Amino acid sequence: MEAECEIYTGVGGAFWDDAVTKNKQETLGTTMLQYSFGTDGKESAEPEGVEIYRGTSENDLKVLKRGIVKDVSCADYDFGKAYADTDVTQGKSYYYKVRAYAMMNGKEVYGDWSPVIRIRAAEPDGVYTMRLVRESDSYRNNVIVALTSADNKNGVLTLSAGVLSGKLTMKYLVTQDYFTQQSLAKSSGKPKKKPSVQQMKLRVDRYSTDGRYYSAVTGDIVLKAQQTVYLELAPTVSTDKLLPFTDLDRAKVTFNVKYNEGSHPLMLDLKKSKALLENPAQ
Image (cartoon, rainbow, N blue to C red):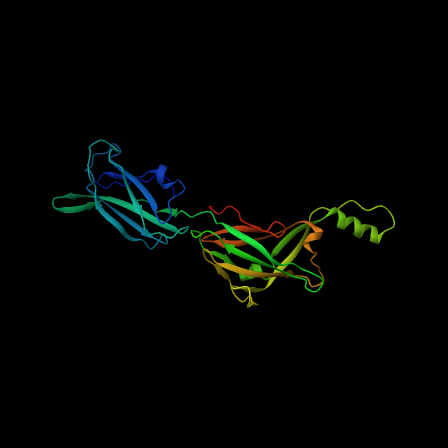
C-alpha cells in the first residue's frame, strides 16, 4: 500500500487506485485490488490486457491473474478495473504488482512493472473469554484460568513460550478492608494510606487443553478458533504470595501474544473473568 504507481513503455499507463489499495481490507478471505489505466498525457497505445502478480515476499511474485481489459475508452483513466483475490488467509500480508500490455503487429508489448505494494488481508476482531477455574488458597500459591477463543471466525492466537515462562505482569489493588486489617495488625497507630496499584511477575507453570491433564510449557501454545487452553499461573519469585481474590479490588494480567501475523497485548481480568485482545486489527 505504497504511493500511486505508473507504467509506460508505449502502452497506456496503469495506476493503483489508492482509495481501495490503501484502505483497510474488510472482507474475510478476499483482498480487493483496484487499478486504472491512462496515457498520462503521453502518446501511447491503449492497453488491451493486464497481468497481476502476487507473492508472500517482495522478491518472489508469480502470476495471479491475466485478463483482457474490456470497454476500452480513449479518455484518460476512464476504464478503471478491480480484481478480488479470493485465495488469501485472514491477517496475512501479500505483495502485488501489475503491468499492462497491448497487441502490436500481432505481438504483446508490455508496459513497465509497477512498484510492489503490500496489502494485509482482512482479519476479524479476536473475541476471547476467560474464566477462573481455581483460585489461590492457603495450600496452593497459584491460579488456573481457562482462555477460550470464542468466535468461530477468530484467527490463530499464539502464546509464546518465552513470554509464558516469566514475562507476565499482574497489576493488583487490595481492598480497603484487607489493607486496614493488615495495617492495624502491624501497628498500634492509625492505618497508613492505602497503597496504589501493585505489580507482580507471573509465569505459566503448566498448561492443559482439556482441563485434566497438565504438562510443562516446552513450546509455543497455539489456540485456534473455538478452542480452549488452561493456564496455571504462579509467581515468578518463589517468595511472592498470591492473595485470594476476595482481598483484591482488581487483578489484571497483561502479556504480549501473536494474533495471526500481528503482535498484541492480551489482558486477563482475573476479578471480572474477562479477556481482551487489544488492537487486533493493527
